[in-house]
Image 1 (spheres, rainbow, N blue to C red):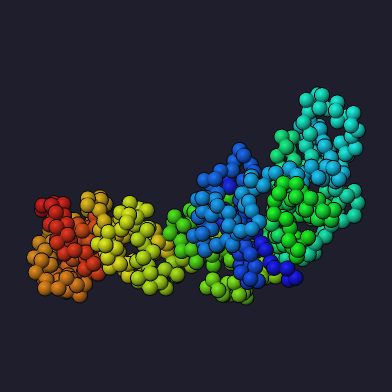
Image 2 (image 1 turned 90 degrees about the horizontal axis):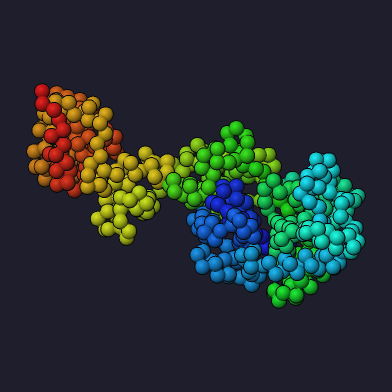
Length: 508
């Protein structure tokens, strides 16, 4: 590339960070990292009715959790810009958008259109591209419309004939006929800029040369190519930058943008991924207990593949391997079952220490451990963690198995009580209690030896020896391996629950 690569991710902050948006950010980030380029984050918050700074902050935190750090853009929380091409909140760039619109109007590339909503509806019903109407109004006609109280939008003239083509990074040569593309609105009747104006102005002014985005924006590209040509060919953008004292364009910045349109994400029904398919927000997957590197790896595989078989990459491997040539233009299936499976495999591969460290904030979010975490709770999680890995596809999956160990009051499963705390369980508990009390070492092996002794002395199976203890200690019939779980807990705490639980066993 003749100029340093600059890419951007520009979400509209009106909700959570959708997995489709996160994948767009990831592909741009990987491309920038592979080429030693700059990854720019710009918040497109010009929709005053929907955009919020709270949403923007949440999106930035989600990107940060994924590891998609940006080189230029607002800072999390404070929105302080870092970089030389700000502002990075699009609402703060409004003076530049207004100046560009004014320059386009003065140069004759744009014109005022005064159609009422009813007139526009008639035009839409005709299924014809908007190329007539108010293109060539006289000053007197414009004055008459204003006298009626009509406020104009500003439209850009599109060519009446010919075609527009570009080499798309994913789809190869893409061609549209200009006769099928109507004059498009760049400012609304209230003067606010539309996406077609603000997005292109900011991309060029911020030196962006490569745009990767979803295929749902494919039809917008001809208009943006035209806007790019208008802004750069006649020096309109440079003049507008000078008008408002924004940073001037630097030599070497690209005057044309290269586009790559990625496939949409779809659910099992092969329809565009939405809330009806379940979780679609990165924040939801984080809250569920997905690991960020697994989420990044999985998103990379949504439409891209190295060789059709490799599914696990480290971040450096992804950066080295990624290219848009290997992005499949067909819709990409967002397989949550596969995501959970990959996450479970990654959890199993974690060291016990890393897994325990990852669990601490999960137990804190569940309200089981205070912030900051007491040393005793951290040590208990570390002791239990090795016995939870095989049972966890997400970090959250570990919580129900051992939540009892962090609660003062036991939460009883009535079905477990009915099944396992029958009268015969009293004999088991009476046999086990003094022997557990008398153990010289409180270890899993020593505890297991006591259970084995009970099976022989009472002539019962291991299940009938263990389950009454499991139920009275945990309140449930399910837990990690019992001897190892008990050994991780304080002996007196365990014995206290065994003694208290004995009262749950009915008499003959």
